[in-house]
Image 1: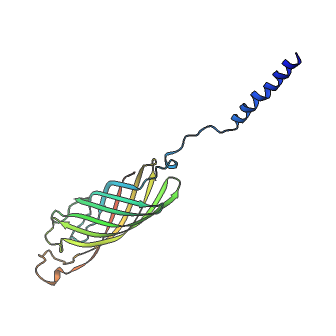
Image 2 (image 1 turned 90 degrees about the vertical axis):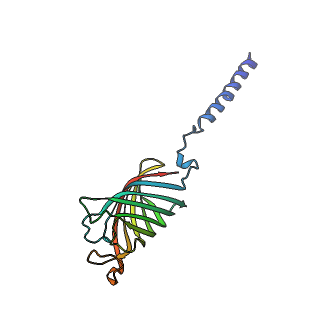
Image 3 (image 1 turned 180 degrees about the vertical axis):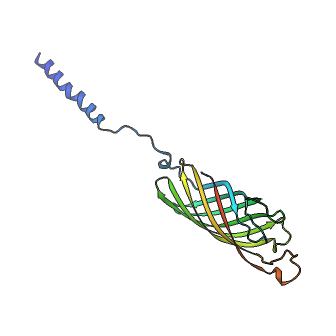
Length: 205
């Protein structure tokens, strides 16, 4: 009887200790995607775009269209952007002729988190700008470049809403009257600055 009682008492702590030890191990928790090694390297932006039209004489209204960009990120703060814009529709009125503007720009971008879901960025872009549908503008394609800033609001790990603005300089003719650009010095090119704005969606992968 004593041996049976001793055996039972010995089995009780043997059964309790493993249960107590297992209760101290935290249960598995779901790992968020950004902590699971799914860091993104690329982002694509597509959205509505606007540009002023200072290179076209007597223009009263800017142009609206689309703005697209692709960015390759290296690390947390630095990336390189390829940016393209096509603007063909007068904003709020009409302009002389039927002008269009296309831009192709490249450059570095610096970005960082500002507050919770809000990120900010600064970029420097260089490339070319083409003015079409307007026979008095010279040259048709000009070297262009400038700086811009923007902000992204994160909807998820991969999706964001973006708003941005740029000041893009280019060199087009500054003749005060609509004459053809092969008629002399009045067609000499001078620097023109155009403000740009864009709003749209960013997808990261």
